[in-house]
Image 1 (tube, rainbow, N blue to C red):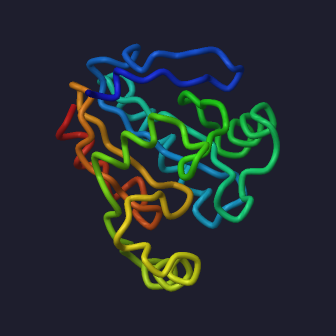
Image 2 (image 1 turned 90 degrees about the vertical axis):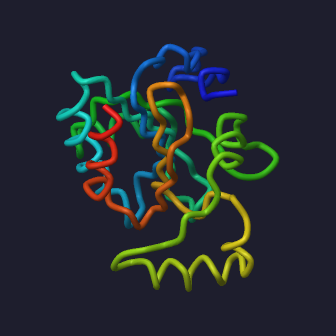
Length: 179
């Protein structure tokens, strides 16, 4: 199986087969509009603009499971992202990434790459914060917070998982190498 075997809903509720993105390098991200990591939209858009003509796509999946930080409906979320961060990459319907209502794509992504560890300046804070919510967080593949990123190669394989503390700029070299 690859991600091409999955279908998701665009922000208007239309089915989109992920095989539409065959042959492209993808960065799949669960996002939120009211999070401390929301400014990562800027870096995501900059990378998208730099590499989209070389076969790179950012797939944005808003998610409200972490601290109710993605309020609003799909249109409100889209308006916020395009107005504040000028995003132009594909945005999909708000989803759940953990639990009984998680979409099958995220079940698959998590089965391919488990928790990668919090790093960087905010790493210690996130470890302590998430550890209070889930003391066993290091030992399960659940998404821990907004802006977890999955890097997918041109064949639809999950190459790597980056937790929310990894800024988009820190993975640019890996994206460039896959292109």
